[in-house]
Length: 320
Image (cartoon, rainbow, N blue to C red):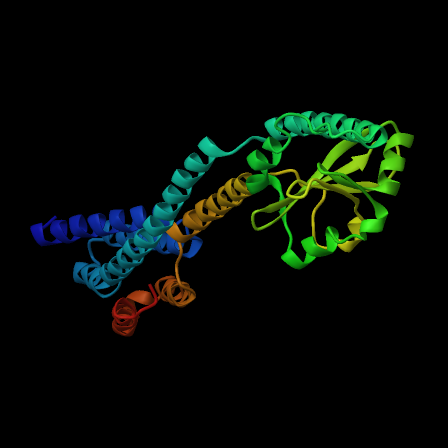
């Protein structure tokens, strides 16, 4: 074998090896077919010395080299975009770690809800006794405002100031009022009837103002406690629309969940983007594969001039 022929075959092998690596990277069927077909063409020249070896060199110059350059450009562009996605994922993870370190857990919240309900029930019993005896004794349990101060920011649902005003609107004639608290007369009657058995139901907030909602354990009725005025009133949940009463997840926990979902999506997008090829490129590859699969392609090698020009034109586009 003469040295020129040997060098062209060696160069051909190198080009095909580069094409193989890119085929494995993109994992695209048509690209893999092109690689296999290029291997067949190489073997055809390697096993038939009577064939003009310069045609193999021309094939790679006109087609393979431009294709490899185009694929490398796409790969580099994809990797840059993927890097941006992973930067966002990293920032999200940092924020998740910060939020996780400061968030009150749902377990603590649910436990403290029970303790707060006990405090409210005890306070209402004392209030009933104070109102009955006509004394000035302070009825509220110690640290009764601690619960809302701790959990309202993360767990309470937002309402408008107009909604809050509507909730705490009352007729003074309907209330028992002393220097410590005010409570609807019918509410106190229902509390006595069901032995002050209530549980914490939900929390609402409008700016810095909060409302605690409670539910009777033995009847489907609700009432509110407005700590700023030590006020107890019946509450009709139908007047409050758009609130998910079943959701006990904190605002920070929701954000952590949303960031985790977003990272999952970004991870999936990054995996897809890594090997993405524009539709125009895939269409061109299919056309090229059709040409090099032609059994009579050696006699029409000059046609690759057109394909080569198209490939080179693609290198100058803004597709990627």
